[in-house]
Image (cartoon, rainbow, N blue to C red; front, top):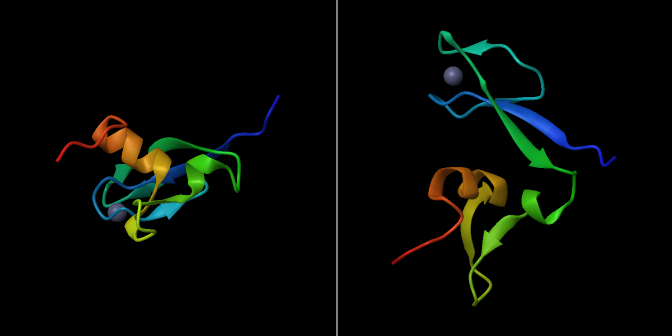
Length: 70
Ligand SMILES: [Zn+2]
């Protein structure tokens, strides 16, 4: 069984922690971040090698449904 990294992020201020807890008066949301160093935890680059977002891929998939439309 692969060890999946789980992190907890506050939906308000987006601070992350590796343990559950409260931030901004509410519990952090649990995210599966994949294995450390896996594709899921790498930031997204466009075809020209520019950083598209500082957010890791699992975050983008969670918030954009995994697809981008322009
Ligand atoms: Zn917070």
